[in-house]
Amino acid sequence: MHSLNDAIAEVFSDHDILPSDVPQLDLYMDQILSLFEQGLRDSKRDPSDKLLTKTMVNNYVKEGLVNPVRGKKYTRQQIMQLLCIYHLKQTLRLSDIKALTGREDVDFEACYSRLLADKERMRTAIPPLLREQLPTNADDPNERLTLCLALSEIACYMRRLCESLIDAIPEQTGGK
Image 1: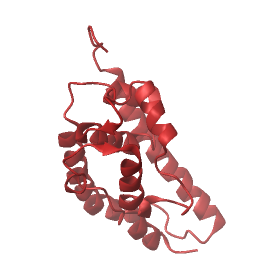
Image 2: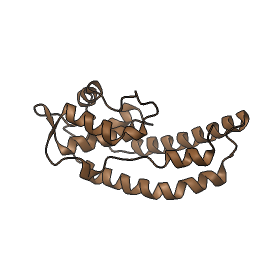
Image 3: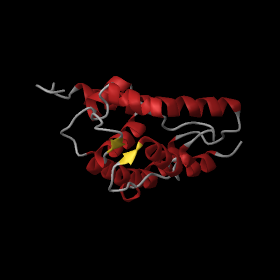
């Protein structure tokens, strides 16, 4: 097993799809899947994992998480919406994600760009905090369990904070 420091370094060195990586022109489904597969492949736990599938995208559109598609191509705004959904689905229920992304009054590219800036700040601030606050002997089974329990609780706090913010969203009138 590798050390906590190695695990932190690995986790916080993930790569993202940058807004500049998303073409300015509309893309077909297969092009979007390739973009996600190539741009986010380092975030897979297992190489065979699928980050995004046609079925997932179709369900997101059907459930109103993504603005309706006209024809067979997806706009840059819809691709940014999919990137936001990808990040949110790691911790939130689809109904919560819909409350955030199933809207036409959001600039998804601006929000995604801010996410990337926030992630850069978090990559600097969070690892030292984790090293300082958490048990570091991940080779000991008791310490490993304790560490995973603590990290799971941190994730629960963050998810509950998101849910609280989502619960405070005013109801939309008309349209969606």
